[in-house]
Length: 551
Picture 1 (cartoon, rainbow, N blue to C red):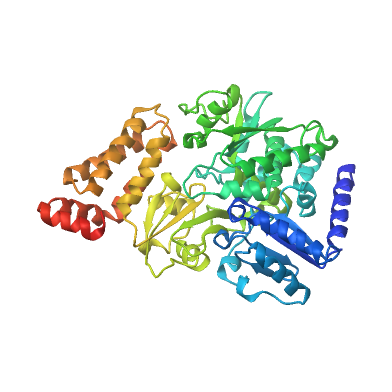
Picture 2 (tube, rainbow, N blue to C red):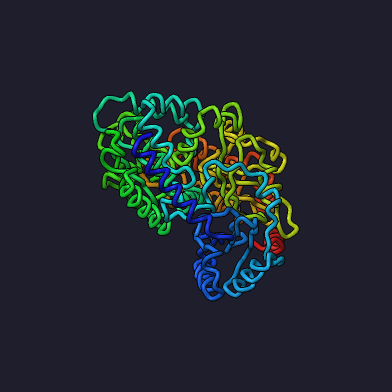
């Protein structure tokens, strides 16, 4: 046993001894969703009340990351009692503690943990979320943290690591779905003594908060995944490119980097292995286009974030012209578990071509707004109606938008489609980074398409003409439909512009921006045609129709 392993085991031993002192451990969600509902005040109230009741030796209060059910925040979990409370307020704290001492529960605040929202999930990326304190490296180590990194640098070759990732079938979780092991292999084989590893945390899709929650809840998993990747490809320096609009994620990431450096998991000659790796944070100014690899690299280099023609690809010529590995937050967060449990274990989850699990942010007109992790191959219907609880308020489901501004609207008749990269692409949408917005029968699908096109229009960097001008023209045509002035010619031009952008835009933003429009035309064409017919009616009838539907 090496010195590194002894130190790790010593930390685990001390942590277990500390936790065994307590009869109850109260977990208070400290992720952005619950923080916005005043969970920090609830945390402080629990700490104060525990002291007031003299329960310091029996009850431990700790902050944890996201527990998933954001719609019920602030969420509080009590172990080992298996109690989960929703919408906890400061004034509820005394009642909860007094009931706990009596071995009872506050029934009107309880969440049913046997509900499909909890039982149908399969957590790999989120295995520590809602369990550990994201600001304590000791908590991460207690839950097998950094074991994979030590295993890699002491007992595996770089090629052996890559082979294990290939065996797992892990594909890029940022949306492209490129085989992760293949990308690592290209960077490994690229010539050059200097190589870089970059974590793309520039999550900008409306309604998406997967990467933010992972960093807020388990930042060390991302750092450990990056370090393993760096060892595999031969890099000694890494960057996390994260949105400045994510202050809590940035704060916890900075804390995690400092802790990992002090513990010897980052820095020079990591645990006397001869492997060195340092990580720096680069803040993005909120440009959606910087989620594209080459635009992200330009921003790190201090230039305006604008995409570059490819090839060469970053894996061969990226940051400062050096071979650069870029994966997103969720991809790196999967790596430690794959190394610990083996590539075959990960490959046993999911479908033939889409292995493992995927994290989704469920938002929109859905009962259980929140973060979920499910095995690839589960159907859209199962996610939305079983796990998500369906559409609230007595309304009917109309469509689900997957993949954000680059995705598409999928109608009810296709809800039994298994969720994987190939199936969603076949439907005219994409997996994307994992945003999933549910739309009900109160929403106008043309308005939805216009919303996403307006987003892409505002976020276009303007470098290429098809995207810079095409988004504006498509947006203006969609306005004509909503204003009741559209014609058949507008419909034809709309489709032609969308196809032009897909085939001629420089980067993924422009190529995929028409997806929401094209998918809505494919599955909800009748809504466009109805607006054309309405515009062709006599003006007095047309005005009455607009008034009747609230236009």
